[in-house]
Image (cartoon, rainbow, N blue to C red; front, side, top):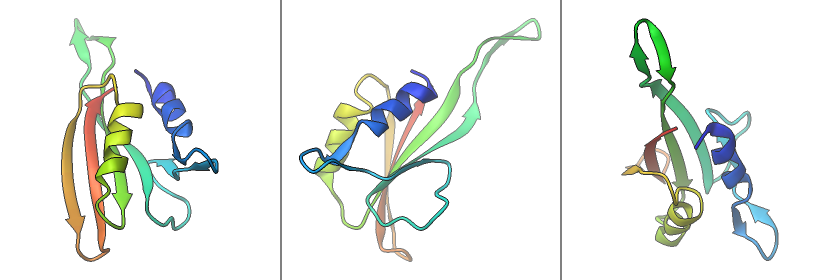
Length: 110
Protein backbone atom coordinates (compact mmCIF):
# COMPACT_ATOMS: atom_id res chain seq x y z
CA UNK A 1 0.00 0.00 0.00
CA UNK A 2 1.21 3.48 -0.84
CA UNK A 3 -0.35 6.96 -0.73
CA UNK A 4 -1.55 6.78 -4.34
CA UNK A 5 -3.32 3.47 -3.76
CA UNK A 6 -4.97 4.80 -0.62
CA UNK A 7 -6.15 7.95 -2.39
CA UNK A 8 -7.46 5.89 -5.33
CA UNK A 9 -9.55 3.81 -2.92
CA UNK A 10 -10.90 6.94 -1.27
CA UNK A 11 -11.65 8.56 -4.65
CA UNK A 12 -13.67 5.47 -5.59
CA UNK A 13 -15.62 5.51 -2.31
CA UNK A 14 -19.19 6.77 -2.57
CA UNK A 15 -21.49 7.88 0.23
CA UNK A 16 -24.31 7.27 -2.20
CA UNK A 17 -23.27 5.35 -5.30
CA UNK A 18 -26.75 5.54 -6.82
CA UNK A 19 -26.55 9.34 -6.96
CA UNK A 20 -22.75 9.52 -7.44
CA UNK A 21 -22.12 11.33 -4.16
CA UNK A 22 -18.52 11.00 -3.00
CA UNK A 23 -17.20 11.71 0.46
CA UNK A 24 -15.12 14.92 0.67
CA UNK A 25 -11.44 14.04 1.12
CA UNK A 26 -8.19 15.88 1.66
CA UNK A 27 -4.62 14.93 2.43
CA UNK A 28 -3.57 16.96 5.49
CA UNK A 29 -5.87 19.98 5.21
CA UNK A 30 -8.99 21.26 3.48
CA UNK A 31 -8.61 24.60 1.72
CA UNK A 32 -12.21 25.45 2.60
CA UNK A 33 -14.70 24.64 5.32
CA UNK A 34 -16.23 21.21 4.75
CA UNK A 35 -19.31 19.86 6.45
CA UNK A 36 -19.20 16.32 7.87
CA UNK A 37 -18.96 13.59 6.88
CA UNK A 38 -15.51 13.85 5.40
CA UNK A 39 -12.16 12.05 5.36
CA UNK A 40 -8.68 13.44 5.89
CA UNK A 41 -5.35 11.62 5.76
CA UNK A 42 -2.18 12.69 7.50
CA UNK A 43 1.38 11.42 7.49
CA UNK A 44 2.36 11.31 11.16
CA UNK A 45 6.03 10.29 10.99
CA UNK A 46 8.36 7.72 9.45
CA UNK A 47 9.64 4.43 10.80
CA UNK A 48 12.19 3.49 8.15
CA UNK A 49 14.41 0.42 8.11
CA UNK A 50 17.94 1.82 8.32
CA UNK A 51 21.30 0.07 8.28
CA UNK A 52 24.82 1.25 7.47
CA UNK A 53 23.58 4.85 7.26
CA UNK A 54 21.22 3.93 4.43
CA UNK A 55 17.43 3.69 4.24
CA UNK A 56 16.57 0.27 2.87
CA UNK A 57 12.80 0.41 3.32
CA UNK A 58 10.63 3.50 3.77
CA UNK A 59 7.65 3.16 6.06
CA UNK A 60 5.28 5.94 7.09
CA UNK A 61 2.88 6.02 10.01
CA UNK A 62 -0.39 7.41 8.75
CA UNK A 63 -3.80 8.42 10.02
CA UNK A 64 -7.13 8.43 8.18
CA UNK A 65 -9.76 10.47 10.00
CA UNK A 66 -13.49 10.20 9.50
CA UNK A 67 -15.46 13.14 10.86
CA UNK A 68 -19.25 12.89 11.24
CA UNK A 69 -22.05 14.87 12.90
CA UNK A 70 -23.40 11.76 14.56
CA UNK A 71 -21.85 8.38 15.16
CA UNK A 72 -22.30 6.40 11.95
CA UNK A 73 -21.19 2.83 12.59
CA UNK A 74 -22.36 1.69 9.16
CA UNK A 75 -20.13 4.28 7.45
CA UNK A 76 -17.23 3.23 9.70
CA UNK A 77 -17.79 -0.39 8.71
CA UNK A 78 -17.85 0.52 5.01
CA UNK A 79 -14.57 2.44 5.31
CA UNK A 80 -12.97 -0.50 7.09
CA UNK A 81 -14.24 -2.97 4.46
CA UNK A 82 -13.87 -0.89 1.28
CA UNK A 83 -10.82 1.32 1.93
CA UNK A 84 -8.79 -0.34 4.71
CA UNK A 85 -9.68 -3.96 3.93
CA UNK A 86 -6.09 -5.23 3.55
CA UNK A 87 -4.39 -2.84 5.98
CA UNK A 88 -3.65 -3.59 9.62
CA UNK A 89 -5.04 -0.64 11.55
CA UNK A 90 -5.81 0.60 15.04
CA UNK A 91 -8.77 2.85 15.72
CA UNK A 92 -9.44 5.69 18.14
CA UNK A 93 -12.92 7.18 18.63
CA UNK A 94 -13.29 10.73 19.96
CA UNK A 95 -16.22 13.06 20.43
CA UNK A 96 -15.14 16.68 20.02
CA UNK A 97 -17.55 18.57 22.24
CA UNK A 98 -16.58 22.07 21.07
CA UNK A 99 -17.37 21.18 17.44
CA UNK A 100 -20.11 18.63 18.20
CA UNK A 101 -18.59 16.05 15.85
CA UNK A 102 -17.31 12.50 16.06
CA UNK A 103 -13.77 11.80 14.93
CA UNK A 104 -12.81 8.24 14.09
CA UNK A 105 -9.06 7.95 13.55
CA UNK A 106 -7.51 4.91 11.87
CA UNK A 107 -3.75 4.49 12.40
CA UNK A 108 -1.70 2.30 10.04
CA UNK A 109 1.57 2.03 8.10
CA UNK A 110 2.14 2.85 4.46
